[in-house]
Image 1 (cartoon, rainbow, N blue to C red):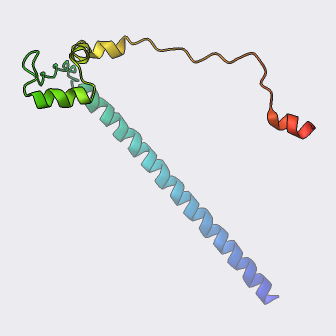
Image 2: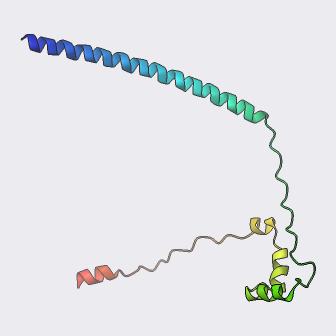
Image 3: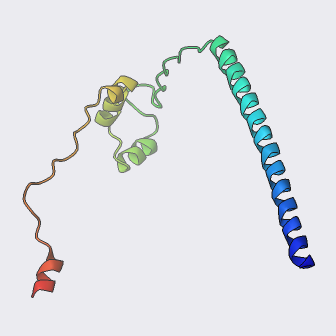
Length: 126
């Protein structure tokens, strides 16, 4: 009987310690939560005081060639080898950031109403 009573006292003591530790952990968690909220408020206040400068437009990239002739004939041949033509250069010069902003997006493709025939079902039924 002494062992059973000792065991019961031990269990009771451990339960009491567990409750104390849990209560202490809850207090610390609440403290951390309130400190985090306070710090978040400070950050929000500081961030609202920082002016956000507008993003300057991207300047055009200077052309590699200084006119219609690219320079050396070897460079012209190499560019033509890779498909870089005068027409392509002129087209690229006309591309700006607004070209991409105004680019129409296609809607998602429509799902066909026609039921598809499953080969697996046909094989299983045969």
